[in-house]
Image 1 (cartoon, rainbow, N blue to C red):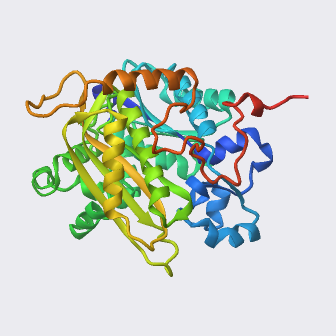
Image 2: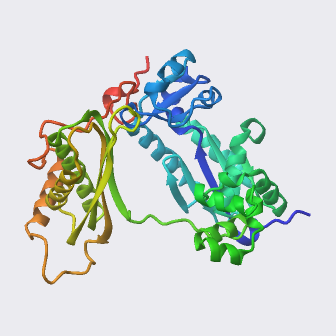
Image 3: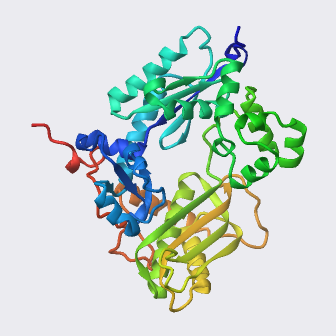
Amino acid sequence: MPTIFRYIYGMFALVDCNNFYASCERVFNPNLQGKPVAILSNNDGCVISMSDEAKKLQLPFGAPIFKWDAFCKANNITVLSSNYPLYGDMSARVMNILAGFSPDVEVYSIDESFLELKGFENYNLEEYAAKMRSRILKWTGIPTCVGIAPTKALTKVANKIARSNIKQSKGICIIDSDEKRIKALKWTKIGNVWGIGRQLKKRLEAKGCITAYDFTQLPSNWVLKELSIVAWRLQKDLQGISKIPLEEVSSKKMIATTRSFEFTYSDINNIKERISTFAASCAEKLRNQKSSCHMLIVQLSSDRHKESQQQHRESKTVVFSCPTDSTLTISKAAVEAVKTIFKSGIQYKRAGVIVTGLVPNDNFQLNLFSHENPKHKPLMSTIDKLNRKFKADKIKLGNQDLKRTWKMRQERLSPRFTTNINDVLIVK
């Protein structure tokens, strides 16, 4: 008799949308069904998602489109710009559907969620998973795969198995016995295990770990002592002992606004304006989650794909004397920082502002000798209210371009079918 352990530990499910960005495009353009599709990153830079048909043509992930455009045309690959408003809305629809299948849901990324299945001992989990897939497909048009297992790490393994051969698995894999667990782990290469990066993979391979099963056979004391508590929890999870719980929604530990420029810039004034705009975005996000930051990091880099040009990449860290969420303070510090790392003659393509060392606005250590201008709080509150009212950044700092809104290069953009009334499909 197989050792069933779902009754002892409970079960988790991982629902993952198949080729999510490409699937979203196919929902509103059925002509793309069965054809190779590739989706580009910000400013139409490189390939970040593709359909199975494009993968079979061996178009690499991360391929810069200016190098692979001829290949895509020769192989009839439809190349589209990222339509983030559409993808975000479709993701929200999928997650809302999943909330009807379990009260305990962790939205792990834009296209996948973990569900904790408590009290499902008498359910036919295969039928329940099929119902999830069917409802999501019927209500949104997005195909999914479901992995069910007693731990989160094992649901990742199960989901990969379900995805590897959809015709045979029907998009579902359930690991509910020790025999199935061992078989699945022996099938999974160590580098494909959730949570194992390149460095850890090298260390484990040096230890003789070729598969995920090999990792589970290492002495737990050695894993804890030589690797980390995180690796130990992962090992236990793969052994069928749940040590990685669902994560509750919490405030972010850092906030970043990083963008590629629409064009390369070699003058400091354009870069200062962009940095000020990125800093203002970070400050607004800070206030939205009622946090302040202790530290600011400014990044600036040239175009690494143009190897013939002089390259430069640098960052600068600024520590504030007291935590702040003021756009005025953060923007001023960011602009001063970028001035120190800018080099004349370099063609810059990308910049970023990161705020970290976050603390709640209502609970942080005061500084006896320094404090923020008390006028900043009511001013920021008023600016936020006005911008929310008019649903645009009507109020900006003087060092921002008042007529300029951030616009990515999106030369292959599909309509925003679900988020813009002018792009809604008309049925005749």
